Each structure stands twice: as C-alpha cells, then as structure tokens.
Image: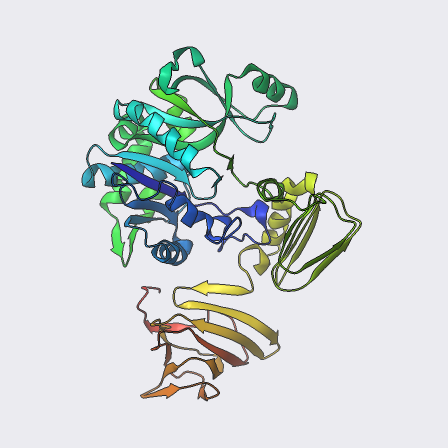
Length: 471
C-alpha cells in the first residue's frame, strides 16, 4: 500500500497578493478548477493499493484543509496539526509514526502540497519505478529532469551507471543552489537533477534512518505524538514537545547522511510555482505571449502575466511584467524581479498590515465574511454561512449588530429568543447579548451585517459554545 503524505505548512509569500499567510498558495486554484492541495491529493488516482491521505498542516489552516479534502471525497487518514513550524523532517516523522502503527509495512509518498505536475501518468509511472526499491528498504527521491540551468533550485547528483533497467540511480550527493556557471555545467553533464522534495519510502525505513542520524527529532516527535489530542477531524500535536524538536529538512536530517538514498528521474511537467513567473511558464500563452486571468484589457503588451480578481485591469505598452489585482492590493513587477515579492511581504508584516496575512474576504469553518466598508464607529460586512453551519454562541462587549438577510434562511438566537429570518428580513443584537447565527437550509445563507460601537475589533468576541472547538 502507498499512503500519500501531504505537507501543507507553507505560506507562499512570493505569490502575494493572492497567497497570504492565512490563505496560502496550496489552498488556491492557480492552474485549474481544483486547488493545489486537491490536485496533490488526487495525483495518484484511485488505485486499489492507494491508502488514505495523511496531511500535515498549520493549525490556522486546519478547517480550510479539511473542507477542501472533503470536497473531493478524499479518504482521510489523519490531518495532523503542527503547533509550530519545524521543517519537513519532523513533520514526516510524525506521519511515519502514525503510519507504522496503523499500516505496518506501508510505503509513504511524501508530497509538497504546492507543486504542479502536468503529466499525472508520467508521475504515476515514476512512482511505480521507485516502488520496488522503496519496498526493499531504499529511501527514494524523485529528481526532476532539468530543462534549463536554474539557479533557484537545489540539485541532486546521481550515478547513471548503477541505474539498471528500472531507472533507479544511486544518489552521489545533494548540491545547494548553484551559481549560473555551475548550473550550466550541471545541465550539460546529464548527472544532475532538480531536487523536487518528493520522496517514497517505508515509514519504518525513514524512522530507522532518522533515529540513527537525528535522534533528538525522533524523541521530540514521539513525545508530541504520545501527548497529542484528538480535536474534531484533527490530531493536535503537543505544543511543548513538538517545539523541542530541532527544525530540519529531510534532506539535511536524513537524505544527505544515509547510504540508502536512490533517485528516480521524473519528467512530468513539474513546477514548484515558487514565483509569479512560474505561473506564466505553466499556463498557455496568447499570440502576444501573455497569460490573462479575469477581466483584463491589453494594448501592446507582450510576454506578461495579468491576473484580475475583482475589477477590470487595463495595461498598455508593457513587456515581461506581472500584474496581480485583488480587492485590497495590486502588485506590479518586472518578471525578472518577482523573487523580491517576499521583501514586500516582510515590509507589510513589519508594519503589521493586515494585507500580509489575510484577504478582505476572511474564511471561517462556518463560511466567510468580507468587510465592505469601515469608518469611525461602524463597519459593514457581507457574511456567507455554509448550509448546515453555525457561528458560535457569543456576545460582544463593545458593539451592537444589525443583520439583514439577502439570500437564504437564517435561524437566529438573540438572548432567550430564537427566530427565523428570510430574504429582506432583519434583526438587531444589542451590546452584551448572547446570540448565534445558523443556516438551517441546504443552500448558502448570505446577509449584511452592520456593526456599530466604540470598538469593532475581531477580538471582541466572548464565546460560550462552539461546534468547531475554538476558544
């Protein structure tokens, strides 16, 4: 059995303003209709020997991850919540420990959640080629067949002489990101591959090598798992124990030290979508070499990527540029400077700007809300509640609220009274009164919320009951 283990802890800062800390790139639909997380979960298809999906994610993304996996009817083995980021070696260790206890002898296919693989059949063939070696105890990594002298990727040097007829090559060395001259030599030699960060091995094999080469990681992860708590659909690792683990990647902790590493060449249209220029690469271009998403109007523009989400974006006389528009931010950059987008995010974070972490539309386990207008002593929101979902039973110490239903049916609790509201009906919630909003119907509920008061911050919530286990 092969069990997919999806690593979904990244924040994707170089794809700002679409990707934000609380809604990162793996949760976005950047290539097709499905999100990158969903494509990753479906990458191996539905063969009989494919086990349930294990996903390791940031605690703040937990409800979005669960919702997206449920949307594609994925069989979920476990959604593991990291209390803090500790890189890939500890994340995979916790998943391996769970898999050895529930599926002894199973292979685990470690997959970053934010990669694009255009040729799914070629990927499945590569996994098949590596399977025999993994079942024999080898630690298999998949090396991307390079198409250019990239300086932004790490490389793996492998020995073709020992590849045999299955295309499995012994790993000679892992190489850091090279300069341009070295990258050109690597490409010309044919012995170097881009490091994909995709792995296949027995869970037991990985844990044996981790124990040998990084025992402090093994001990910390075991303690974090032994003291973990089940929380709805999630497994919440013990925070203190997991934080005690060193932060290290699989490469550094295990793959560069083991003598069991082998490589399978992978030529399947792979891209880690590490910057906006990568999205330009993987999309089809028009006659002028442009990629257009949304409501876009161009004149004399070439070789550019223009993405509009909420309004018309018009451009004239540009070449090799990136323009990305969201409801609260617009990015304009030369295509050869897109790696510097992360520097803008650092500035936003340093100034404690909301745009670094969240969109104007904020997602919650029950649905979402979007701030329409805000000024001194009032705020207007558009709220969407999923069918069958409910907000917590709560009160506010500093604000009153007025709810107007514009679509669907609302079941509203205000104090001791429960009422049903339909389209074009409203209710008022005074300051300090406990209240709850529910959607009893099988279609989304939409309403306008008008807040008034001296303080309108999101932290002015006192919850007494919540089906999602929030504080």
